[in-house]
Image 1 (cartoon, rainbow, N blue to C red):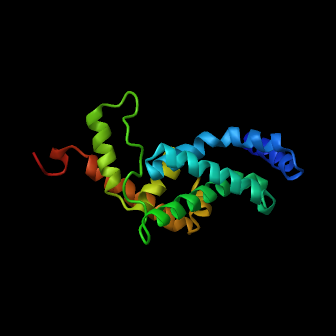
Image 2 (image 1 turned 90 degrees about the vertical axis):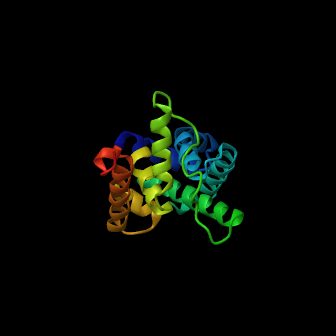
Length: 181
């Protein structure tokens, strides 16, 4: 990751000097992760593609405002987070994303029943808890980076994540482990 940060920093420096190819290389490195993150938030590939384009346009327009080139990933995901929530507000004012948070397809190699159970359990989490799970489990961000993306304290992030994981553990436990038969 340190090697990638150095390379990202070089590409950011090139972009700031007006090198479009430098920015294109940044986009090619990050577009899949940003798209997948947005897909897990929206559940809609078309919306996710549109939002991804908006994210990279805003990143390009604001790249000079990025204080620390080594923090490009969290900065980019903060833009993605803001774009997604802005789109949710436009579609349904005063509501957060509650449905379609995760892709509505079965991952390869996972039994359909298990996939449906996991999806159902994830849908019962609050939007904040789901996003904490996405950023940590699916995207692999550190707690400090998650706090930067979501603009809240690390302690809040940890609380959301651990509460969500406890709920998922309970929800996905076999019926006999939960007291049922």
